Each structure stands twice: as C-alpha cells, then as structure tokens.
Image 1 (tube, rainbow, N blue to C red):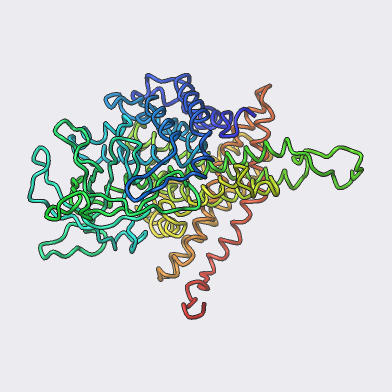
Image 2: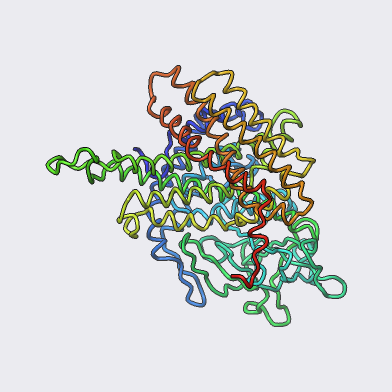
Length: 615
C-alpha cells in the first residue's frame, strides 16, 4: 500500500478507466491538456499533501487555534502548507489562463482537492472556502470586484469565507437580521457602499492571520423606505465585506469594522477557526461611522440566488470531504488489519500456532468490505458529479449541457448527504477494526470519525436536503430532473444487458426494479394532496434514493472492471476487488431500500402526528 491518505490506483480507475476524463482534451478549453498533465497535477497534489498537510493533522487537532481576546494563534505548519499550496498555483487550478489558472477540468480539480482534504481537512478548509468565494464573485461580481478581490484570492494573498448563519436563525436564512444601510459616502471609483451591522455564527476561517486579508461574503438585508427589513428571503442581498479595506493601490489598509467575538469549539475540524463575527460593533471605527463597510454583489435583494453559486459548490465539496475522510479511514483500517496479529480461526484453536493477521477473520473482512463499498461508491458519485460540471460547461451541444445540468441538480443533495451519512459509518467501522486502539487519540481513525461527523450538518442537514430532493428536485420542470436520472440509469442497465456478464445481469434487474419502485412511491407521495404528509419522511426518501444512485454508480464501475478482467493480464486483484464491492452493495445494501420504500408508500404519519407534550 503506497499511501494511507488516498488510493492513487482507485483515482486513476475512476478518472481514466470509468469517467474517461482524457476525452475532455478534445474540447477547446482543455486542448492543452493530456493524461500526462492530469497525472502531473495529481502527483503534485499527492506530494504536497503527504509532505506538508498530513504531518500536522493531529497536531492542529490537539493544538487548535487560540484566541486571547485580541488575536488568533494558529500553529506554524498550517501557514507553511497553505503558502506552498498557493505557490504551486493550485488555488487557480480550474481557472482561465487569464486568471493565471491551469484550466483543469472540474473533475480533475476535485481529484486534486481530494488529496488535501483527506490529508488534513482542517487546513484544507481555508483553501476551498476561498476558492468557492472567488468562484461566486466570478459569476456575480463586477470587473472591479474581480480585480480587487478575486485575483488576490487565486494568488493566495487573500482568503475568503461565506457568512450566512446567525445565532438566532441557524439554517433559516429568511430570519436573518443583519442590516446593510446605504452609506452616503461613495466607495472607490464611485461604487455605492453600505454599512453592515449584525452577527454571523459558525463562520469557518472567519479570523486568522494566514493571509493579507479575509474577504467575507455576507448575507444581509437592506431596509426599506420605512427602515424595516423585508421579511423572508426576498429581502436578502449579498455583500463583500473585507477584513481590511483596500487603499488606492488595492492593498490592505484600514481595518474594517469586523470583530471576532469568540471561537466555537467543534468536535472535529479543530484546526479551522470557527467564529462568531460581529459586524458594526464600533471597535475599529468611530461611533459616528459605525458599521462594517461592504460592497453589493450583483443585484439588490438577489443575495440568496447569488450565494447559491457558492453553496452548491460547497455542497459537492462537503460530499467530497466526507468521501475522502471515509477513504483514508478505510485505508488506515486495511493497513492495520494486514499487520495486526490476533486470534485464530474457530476451527483452529491450537495455542501453539501463531496468531493470524486479523484480516483473515471473516468479520473483519466484512467491516473492511462494507467500508470499501461505502467510500469508493461515494467517491465515485462525487467525481461523477464533478464530471457533470464539465459537461454542463463544455459539452458540444446545448441539449447535452442542459441534460448534464439536470442530472447535477438532482444529484447534488444526494452527493452531499449520502457520503456524509455512510462514510461516517465507514469511519465507525474503521475504529472497530482497530479494536480498543481505535478509540484512543494515539490512532488516527478516531479523529477521522470526529472530523467527518461534522459533514452531516455542513451546508445543510439531511433533513434539509431530503426536503430539497423530494420537495423540489423530483417535481420541478415537470419532473425533468427525475426523468433525466432515470434515463441514465436505464442506459446503464441496457449496456450491462448487452455485455451479458452473468453476475451483473442480476444486478441490472435489481437496479431497474428499485428505480421503478422509487418512481411509483414518488407518485404515491404526491397523490396525498397534503404536502405535510408528502414530505413528512423526506429524509428516508433521500436515503433510499441515495442507495439506489450509489448502486447505479457501483454497477458502472463493475461493468468497467468486468471488461478489464476479460482483456487484461495484470492488476487483476484490483478489478476483482471492484466486483466484490459491487457484489456486497447489491447483496447487503440495496435490499435495505425495499422496506424504506414500503414505509414511504404507506404514508406513515407516526412522526408527523407526534406531539411536543408527548415527549
């Protein structure tokens, strides 16, 4: 095993054997690239992640950032790692050449990112929040905003955040109360500027001294003529609020009125500052000028739509992070199981015989195989979604781009939530494989579990994404998104039947039946005429749909593996492992969907009918 961070062999399989990323080089945007340039980017990522990110992962967990009331202290290796990442040009790896980017496809960019998140999710958070922030401004900002804020972020000179939640509102963004009042003083180049006041909670990377500036993207409401805030989400606007205002040369100068009130201390991702920020407290400005200066992004009252550019990218990023934390936990457990001697087979209890490596015990192999099925299925799903981003942006016809967008819209809540649930389960199994050692801080797997446990709430809980999938994605555009995924699934089933591999034929039948069952149950749920009943068990719907989608991902991978076994003479164990993981998923996991769909079809109202007083 060459690395316990990620399996390069599996990444190569996903990218080059299954998703055919090399075919993208026929498109103008990627014409300068080849498999060699993609591999070189992955090589660079693996080296930097292994040399500079992984070594301080446990240290940043045990010596988390400290706030003394004035400034935040972060261990030195974090900045060294981030500076090296930026110097390698990776911050702009997916961007245009005009932005000093590499124009890597999104799917390769995400595979590169996977190395850093798996090696050290806390340090990587500073990077990927910045990239998502910059990408949002590229889509919605003015040329000046791109010049003043985006380019320095891609250069690693500034870092970025997203400031959505507030202490009293949480995920209910319609209830935010941060205000943005037009400032009578004009900003640079005559740009209208605003003064913001309010609080933002759970802001990852919200305060540090790792870069020359922090560019906060802040949701706030502009008061109406009567001074009152517009209720609901339609009153929300998006603002750039930098930690330091820029001088006439575009360099950080005067401190803006953004104050760190305190750090939150989460069970995982401890190396990332997680902040309560006060805007307009008056600490850094005279009372007469209180309010953090911000610049409107896009159109007023369209802030949530603009922020969704960042949120959707972040959701796929959360899914990727969950998947690779599952992968690294699995690889650590696999390495441990191969090297830990303990016990003997039930029929061979001669104490004179040496103990076996625990991987030779059936239940350990069960736990390892479950992990493999979860984490490689999840990683495949997320990278498939990244490949859809490339199709959406560069496919040859408008129809192909639209189809890719429909698939991506439907799959995004699943790509965020399924890995966040099942790769945490993989981490739990990795701890169990280690036995008593796995529950100690001396071994890495307990930290992977804690870090990964956060992903089920990052960028929306399972409940929120269940409502998104069942309440919106299956019905919008007259069900076009649901039909698009069904058509792709049917194409996979048809291809497997053409190939005629006996074991896979049974899986194709099983997958087709599960999707037909999901379609029928969806119709039943919407036949109630009562939206509360339809959506009461949306989280169960999300889990069932996710299992079907990951079964589809596994069937595609198994189809490639079966073809390779029929034609190749080397690396056969790798392909047999793929087939066995697919077999596990269809024998052990996909059957779980049947009872879930039966429950949904019954329009069970047990949880809906439960009353507060009965608890």
